Length: 404
Image (cartoon, rainbow, N blue to C red; front, top):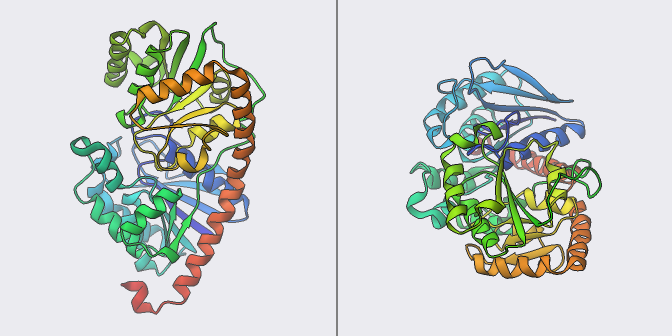
């Protein structure tokens, strides 16, 4: 099949760690590569955010990234991109009308709006992966939610009209059903992990004599980094390494980094909290292997790739009992679940882990075995099955149903 993926703000070519660059970028890059490895041709469409970017960039065998001209060619916050959805749609139709793909696969809601309209014009099936839902974001962030007012309504339209919806976890399946998606058209397809890169064996990043706790991800409040800092303040025998945000040479100028450093000083852990900036994926396994435990303490989490990467490296995870972390982390088997936004509960869980090396080893071994269920080859096979089901759905519709 010829597959067109659309990921408007999350380019698979992006450097990770920024406010809008994280798990979705990794997911799209890895999924496109794995789907192509099954014999398909994949084009990933993303918005041009730099005038110097070429129109087409090879990503992997069978995968090309194409840049859409939608809005000014500069980096913009993703919440500002909804106004350019009509341009994205027009660009997609223009580039695909001469040879329509077998399926359009949209990643995130704005990609979905552009893809749904384009798919109707092209007469092809459209598959939607949300990666995050506006209703969930608003529920947890309240007035701090910066999403456009049209987001929840747009996601409701996508849930009801996409040919198929790929939910990242069982919790998200329930959420999209509440938006109006028909259960028969929802497939639960998780994200994956690269088991050749993330392994228990290999280089280990240098560390001192203290126990090491690690957080990896974007430096945004909902990821729970504040709670991790408050946690380590209660564990004087431990240090906390935080990987994410800008590159190391730009940390001092970053407002969120400065806020987190102030917090660490206020709670008495400033000398044991180290923000190292963005870490390339080639260096991330060594950093994970240097940790006694990886902390994943988000307020909510549509899926969460970091826990899988930690488990693949044989490192136990302390994770909020939310979203996709309920599926991937098995409490008492591969890690520990704690209530979200409850540093005291996390302190107790981490204290018990740090006091028991045998428990850490047991959880780490079990985590490695569980991670084998989440290879990108397995994920790509599940996505391919969804594509075929989407094609059968479109084939059964009348032209009027496809257009409407």
